Image (cartoon, rainbow, N blue to C red; front, side, top):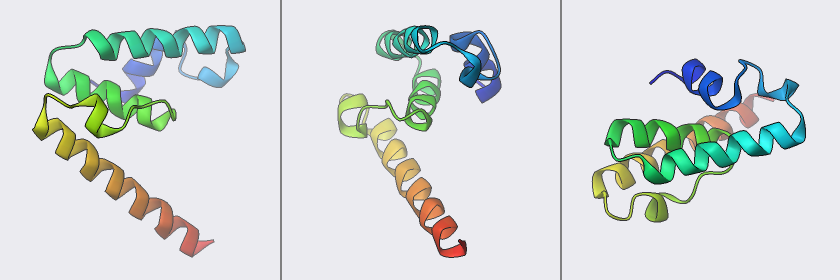
Length: 92
Protein backbone atom coordinates (compact mmCIF):
# COMPACT_ATOMS: atom_id res chain seq x y z
CA UNK A 1 0.00 0.00 0.00
CA UNK A 2 1.37 3.37 -0.82
CA UNK A 3 0.63 6.47 1.21
CA UNK A 4 -0.71 8.53 -1.68
CA UNK A 5 -3.16 5.78 -2.60
CA UNK A 6 -4.33 5.45 0.99
CA UNK A 7 -4.90 9.18 1.32
CA UNK A 8 -6.80 9.30 -1.96
CA UNK A 9 -8.89 6.26 -0.99
CA UNK A 10 -9.96 7.53 2.42
CA UNK A 11 -10.09 11.28 1.79
CA UNK A 12 -11.06 11.36 -1.89
CA UNK A 13 -8.29 13.88 -2.56
CA UNK A 14 -4.51 14.09 -2.41
CA UNK A 15 -4.84 17.13 -0.12
CA UNK A 16 -7.02 16.41 2.92
CA UNK A 17 -6.52 20.03 4.07
CA UNK A 18 -8.98 21.13 1.37
CA UNK A 19 -11.83 19.12 2.94
CA UNK A 20 -14.50 20.54 5.18
CA UNK A 21 -14.21 19.56 8.85
CA UNK A 22 -17.20 17.24 8.46
CA UNK A 23 -15.73 15.47 5.43
CA UNK A 24 -12.35 15.19 7.14
CA UNK A 25 -13.93 13.68 10.27
CA UNK A 26 -15.94 11.27 8.11
CA UNK A 27 -12.75 10.14 6.36
CA UNK A 28 -11.01 9.59 9.69
CA UNK A 29 -13.93 7.47 10.88
CA UNK A 30 -13.77 5.44 7.67
CA UNK A 31 -10.04 4.91 8.23
CA UNK A 32 -10.60 3.77 11.83
CA UNK A 33 -13.23 1.28 10.71
CA UNK A 34 -11.00 -0.07 7.95
CA UNK A 35 -8.20 -0.56 10.47
CA UNK A 36 -10.54 -2.35 12.85
CA UNK A 37 -11.72 -4.89 10.28
CA UNK A 38 -8.48 -5.40 8.34
CA UNK A 39 -7.01 -8.89 8.76
CA UNK A 40 -4.04 -8.85 6.38
CA UNK A 41 -1.06 -7.84 8.54
CA UNK A 42 0.76 -5.68 5.98
CA UNK A 43 -2.37 -3.71 5.16
CA UNK A 44 -3.24 -3.37 8.85
CA UNK A 45 0.21 -1.96 9.60
CA UNK A 46 -0.02 0.46 6.67
CA UNK A 47 -3.37 1.73 7.94
CA UNK A 48 -1.93 2.13 11.42
CA UNK A 49 1.02 4.18 10.13
CA UNK A 50 -1.38 6.51 8.29
CA UNK A 51 -3.44 6.84 11.46
CA UNK A 52 -0.26 7.59 13.41
CA UNK A 53 0.70 10.30 10.93
CA UNK A 54 -2.75 11.83 11.41
CA UNK A 55 -2.53 11.63 15.19
CA UNK A 56 -5.36 9.13 15.67
CA UNK A 57 -3.57 5.80 15.98
CA UNK A 58 -4.11 3.63 19.03
CA UNK A 59 -1.03 2.68 21.01
CA UNK A 60 0.79 -0.35 19.58
CA UNK A 61 -0.14 -2.48 22.60
CA UNK A 62 -3.82 -1.78 21.93
CA UNK A 63 -3.66 -1.83 18.14
CA UNK A 64 -1.75 -5.09 17.85
CA UNK A 65 -2.50 -6.91 21.12
CA UNK A 66 -2.91 -10.24 19.31
CA UNK A 67 -0.07 -9.66 16.85
CA UNK A 68 3.24 -9.39 18.75
CA UNK A 69 5.37 -8.91 15.63
CA UNK A 70 3.23 -5.98 14.47
CA UNK A 71 3.26 -4.55 17.99
CA UNK A 72 7.07 -4.64 17.99
CA UNK A 73 7.20 -3.12 14.50
CA UNK A 74 4.85 -0.32 15.54
CA UNK A 75 6.92 0.39 18.65
CA UNK A 76 10.08 0.50 16.51
CA UNK A 77 8.31 2.87 14.11
CA UNK A 78 7.38 5.21 16.98
CA UNK A 79 10.93 5.14 18.35
CA UNK A 80 12.36 6.01 14.94
CA UNK A 81 9.79 8.78 14.43
CA UNK A 82 10.61 10.21 17.85
CA UNK A 83 14.34 10.20 17.04
CA UNK A 84 13.68 11.94 13.73
CA UNK A 85 11.50 14.51 15.45
CA UNK A 86 14.18 15.20 18.06
CA UNK A 87 16.86 15.42 15.37
CA UNK A 88 14.78 18.00 13.52
CA UNK A 89 14.39 20.07 16.70
CA UNK A 90 18.16 20.06 17.22
CA UNK A 91 18.58 21.52 13.74
CA UNK A 92 16.16 24.41 14.37
